[in-house]
Length: 252
Image 1 (cartoon, rainbow, N blue to C red):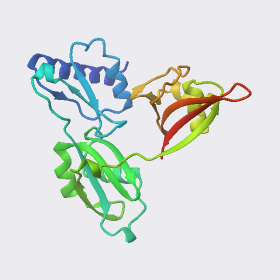
Image 2 (image 1 turned 30 degrees about the horizontal axis):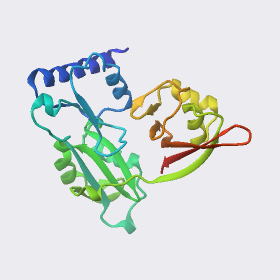
Image 3 (image 1 turned 45 degrees about the vertical axis):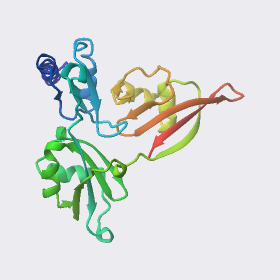
Image 4 (image 1 turned 135 degrees about the vertical axis):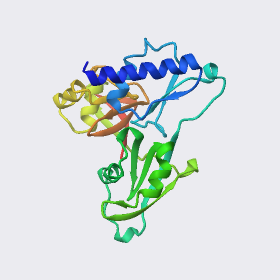
């Protein structure tokens, strides 16, 4: 483990102990998949401290850790996460905006990545999940994304939050192994899929895994860095050649 990882785990340890000894909620910044893997590697050590992870919506990839619980702290509190809608002022004159464009605009404001969570793109509109503490700054100062003049507003109505869109597919695979299904979903060779597991680019239910041979269970969420994400639904039959039909929901 490198020095940066050791410092990260030291910080996690300090936050957990602060929550436990002071009986109050303590939050991390947004953690990426690698940082979450380092956190989960500490579960046994931190088993005396209650915690939850949340990213602002179901199956978010970048998430905060909240140390504390109602039992420990004597009250309940939510996560300090805001959702900001970023949309072109005039759609007909707008550039086609990508995730990289929205992220670049935020970096140009001096906002560091750990203060921001996932960015969901719907059409040409971006939904940014970020810490409450920077939401006012973003809404007041983010005027342009790429060459497009934009307006920002905090989403307060849960019904306005972006909903994930899926493409339902039935696939034929040799077995219900994580690498076999992942290869089929993303049109990869078995060896390419295996490399993704070896390179720690695969997470199942938010936990980074190198176990490519494990079987998937219904509702397992598989995220593959650089390729996308899908939900394994079920095995749905067997072919005459004894291969397996599986149903998946692929995020689009």
